[in-house]
Amino acid sequence: MLSTFGDSLALLTSVEAILTLILGTMLGIILGALPGIGSTVAVAIILPFTLGMSQAPAVLLLLAVYAGSVYGGSISAILINTPGTPQSAATTFDGYPMAQRGEAGRALGWATMASVAGGIVSVLLLILAAPQLARLALNFGPIETFGLLLLGLTCIVAVSSGDMIKGLIAGALGLLLAMVGGDPITGTPRFTFGDFRLIAGFDLLAIVIGVFALSEVLLRVSEKLSGTAEFVSFKGIVLPRLAEWKGRLKGLAKSIALGCGIGVLPGTGAATAAFVSYAEARRSSPNSGNFGKGEPDGIIASEGANNAVTGGALVPTMALGIPGDAVTAVMLATLTLHGITPGVRLMQDNPTLIGAIFAGLMVINLLLLPLGMLASAMAAPLLRMREAFMLTAITLLCFVGVYFVRGNPFDLWVMVAAGISGFILRRQGFPMAPLVIGMVLGPTLEMTLRQGLIITNGSFGAFFASPIAATLIVIAIATLCWPLLSAARGRFRSRRGA
Image: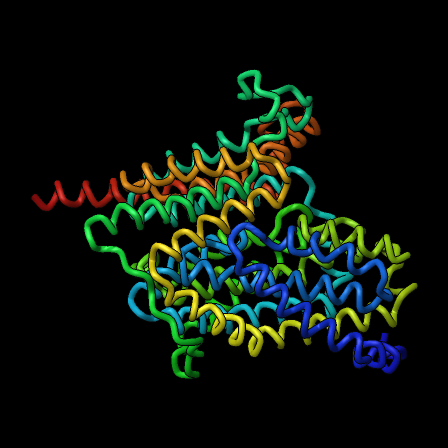
């Protein structure tokens, strides 16, 4: 690839490529910040426009929209407690509480720096270790992936806001919602009650927007009646000083490593990485007691991981022709449409193009800093609108965004039902994050479990024959049981002291 570096640089520095990088990144940030659009939809919207472009600018445009949208979701997550993309849902846990304290600029500053760092490291990983990571990903079959996702479900314990029972109930509800629709193996309808509209299951985006955005609107309306609601103030991004990173760099490095590693595994995605990283940060951070109250470590964990996925997810896409998530599935289609065959010979057959893509992705992540500051500053006038107008605008964005994904009016009813249910559950103290975690991880968890049982002839014990799966399952069980054991030990000591 070094021999074709000059040709790759020439591709990247053309006027068309430069404009593509800037406009694509800006467009991605804006689309990602709009509740309900999401990375997959944003990339899908742009895909038709690439058909008249040459290979390098076409792929770079989609990569710019992809990376920009992943970061853009944090803007609405922090400013209005509405994740623009599902992978930004974990950012609301600490980002919005910081904004409520009048620190919206600082919260976005942490998110921006973590996003840029995660993106840059993931590109370096993609450049330096793509062949090795592709071989590692081949070791993860259904059984190993099941162990990883089971470990991811223990995030429910970490984000249950101190009430583990309510968190587990919400998580179980999310898993139940994920099971609605056709059986992933046999196709048999489940929990559809004879309604054909439920054959495809509930749309994840409709549920996420409902339980976060619509329920937030309903909560604001109910609080406004008592005169307690108030929108956050925001005057622009405030980047953290170097001294403020003391003690946080380790957490950033860990979240980036988790994002890169999870991104490499086919079928996982940025949402899984964000929740797993957040749970690990809450477990290991010296400021774990502040999580959920506006702790920067929580924002760093979520944003560092979900942006690190962008480079990692391209490893199986380019090296194996296996998409790492839904967005890279669209990317795979783009490569094919432009006559590029992903797989083991991609780098050998297209060294100039691949060099331009790697360098372009690095530039895109660097552009997140200035363009992110510009895009977030554009949101300030919106936040100075009257509260009634803002609530109306959020509601309209939710309806438009959810309908745009599949053009299915039924999804709007699902979103409304999720919003009302989320409002009721939140008023009763149930956290919504576990519900979303259950829905995000549930389908893949079930699929890998069923595939693993088929491979092992129905033997659960055979899952422990895989060292990787056994280690992950044991860690998951220990993580889930530890809070219960700690509580029991505390009660025992209290009785003994009495």
